[in-house]
Amino acid sequence: MPLRPGLEGVPVTQSSICDIDGNQGSLKYRGYPITELASNSSFLETTFLLIWGELPSKQELSDFEREVQMHRRLSFRVRDMLKCFPESGHPMDALQSSAAALGLFYSRRAIDDPKYIYNAVIRLVAKIPTMVAAFQLIRKGQDPIQPRDDLPYSSNFLYMLTEQEPDPLSAKVFDRCLILHAEHSLNASTFSARVTASTLTDPYAVVASAVGTLAGPLHGGANEDVIAMLEEIGTPHKAGEYLDNAIKNKQKIMGFGHREYRVKDPRASILQNFGEELFARFGKDEMYEVAKSLEEEAIDRLGPKGIYPNVDFYSGLIYRKLGIPRDLFTPVFAISRVAGWLAHWREQLGANRIFRPSQIYTGMKTRTWTALEERPNNKDE
Ligand code: ACO
Image (cartoon, rainbow, N blue to C red; front, side, top):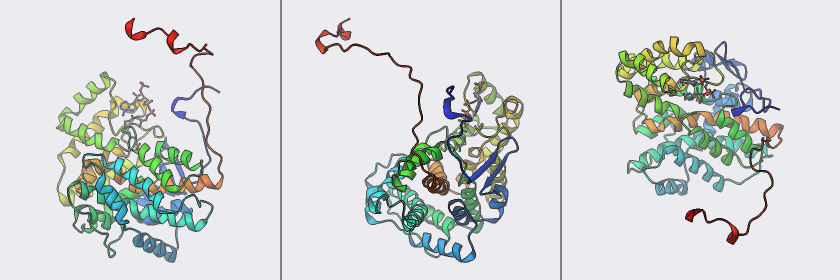
């Protein structure tokens, strides 16, 4: 079999979770178009759908919301652990470590017990936002604040982060951003989650490995770089020149391109609309004008290669309007994507075979051992 770098186009599993048509720009979770979910659903309802395969009944949804709400708090030991991390560390590293640490607190490897699976889902969905917000306050020298039981999931996260109850529009837009980022088939972090899951380890290790994979700038980390790029461009009329230079120097335009899409990522279009709602209400962001100009200028230059804005292109602009610091953009992505990772964890366990791909060996053939004293002293040569 020929080598396919990056496994492009190579199926490695069957899945009924997410369906992408990259030529049409369509994305569905469990058969429901993303446009419908982003207009009508909530993040927790979408999480339920992704993980259990069906939309919840009224009762199931309220039970799920209540259970998540009851498990939002962190053990004081997890909080103390977060306090020991260096303030200068990246919040994704703090999140990866603390997600893995949860495995120390909750009994391991009962992964054939449906109750254990349900509880692990609840804990991870409930506690990841609290860990992200707690590290943010701790690194500013403050004590984390407790979740507020009267606030729904997304409002509570923004409250724990900013110490202010968000207005309804901000909470709604944030919740919908979480829906948009919740799942995207076999992206790098989800593949990582499935590989880890296939060893039958615990779900906290599964999520920790996925968080580490999401952190890279070619994956979830791109939206941080988009803002840096827009700031470097500075004004809309410099977008064309920036693109020409980047293309000449073979530099990637951050927030553009996707292995799956040959057209604009449908999530980018929805996010752009949410951004416009926020800018109309809370004031415009100059960088949005730069982004629009970059997208327009890129049509002729990158469009013929099927390179268009991806989900990361507009999300950072929204997050900063919501008061989320730049290096929390990727942890926020993780808060959402945990839904997809857990859906894939369950699916992997349902028909598991450990991942163990093959390789094409390019190293030396058999060599003869040379004793240490007989080896040439490279340093003196
Ligand atoms: N800017 C300019 N050119 C690009 C870009 C881009 N953003 N993306 C791809 N290309 C070009 C490549 O230079 C290459 O051109 P060539 O064939 O002439 O050499 C061609 O398109 C194919 O590029 P690959 O890197 O091979 O495409 P791949 O499918 O491996 O990569 C990826 C996809 C990693 C997303 C890529 O488009 C990229 O690096 N984008 C920028 C980073 C980014 O925005 N990442 C977030 C993706 S969404 C997410 O993970 C949540």
